[in-house]
Amino acid sequence: MTQAATQIFPVIMPVADADKRLKGRDKVKALSRLARSALMRSCEKSGLHLDAFPKSDTGVPLPVGGVHWSLTHKSDMVGGVASLLPVGMDLETIRPVNDALLAKVAAEDEWQLVGGDRQKAFFRFWTAKEAVLKAVGKGMVGLSRCRVVAIVDDTRMTLTYDETPWPVAHFWFDGHVAALTAHYLPVCWTLL
Image (cartoon, rainbow, N blue to C red; front, side, top):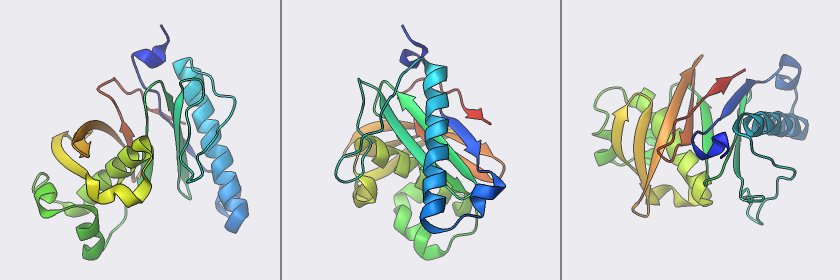
């Protein structure tokens, strides 16, 4: 039995200063390359193997030999994860957001679950929903069908997508938060 059957190993890596200065397509290519490097490290940690990164016509990552995968990147951080189960990962830099964006990401009954600081909760909700939408292969078009239903603690919550529950794990680091569909498995985050 591989470690991947009992744990999930997401990897997060910083973007080098030279890559941060790139613009346009050059930057996108650099971030994609770095995210794939994080994905390959996730494979190494979990004992999984990927030799290709196929995507559907709509850009959804397709499993290879039973290995599911997800990438995420921002200007200063990238991440990747491989799993034997459908998986989604997202990360965001925490920053102020306007009220219109708060209203777009969650309904009032979802906000009631967190009570206080909606600014911080926004990034939990946003990354969790994006991770679930990646795992189900729907993208942002499915946002209204993805709902926060329970907050366990600062690092765990449960969402549903069309009534199917999705446990999500969060990882807080250096002004960022990452989210991962966890499938009730222990998550071993690696920050390089």
